[in-house]
Length: 46
Image (cartoon, rainbow, N blue to C red; front, side, top):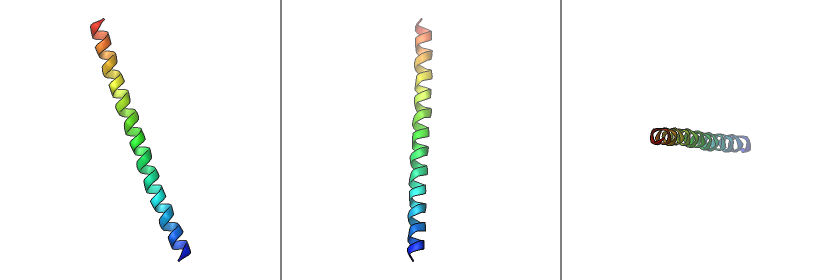
């Protein structure tokens, strides 16, 4: 029973960790897109 509990906890931690990593990657991609938009606006104004 102790081994099963450890396995469940490990799986839960892995799922939470992968969700956090995916969220961070999405944040970075959105940030990159916003920077591209800002760069385009600046170049258009120049």
